[in-house]
Image (cartoon, rainbow, N blue to C red; front, side, top):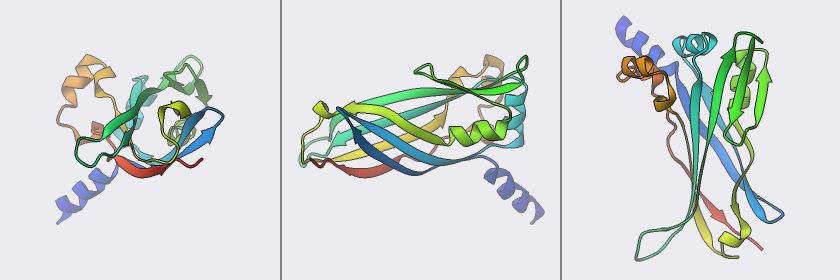
Length: 176
């Protein structure tokens, strides 16, 4: 019985779940805002504190449903977010693939910012029709391919390093 309890607590240490996502119109484009739950095990926290950079990939996809054929891909976009620690400045940083960099005094602050996607430009208004319904998909995952090679070998079967959200899906209706 004790082993079962320990393993269930261990499995709960890492969590990556998308809570909500929405698409908002601004000027000639659409932007994504999303929130997710994110928690790391002590080993992952320790790796970050020791200077191992952790990469996350955020993937968005917009499809137009079709009745008698595969759904039409309208927009597909991804971005990387790098969480790292700089020993010299003693700061944790988040660097996005669009070169946005934010520094934090502690890991908790950095993780709290990492839990939010704010005003990410995902597609232009010209890419969609005025009154159609679309399926939107969002997924966030830890990119193990960007970890140091030795660590990649060590974590292949370690559940602590298997951080991937389930694909979050919702209906997007374009209104004039």
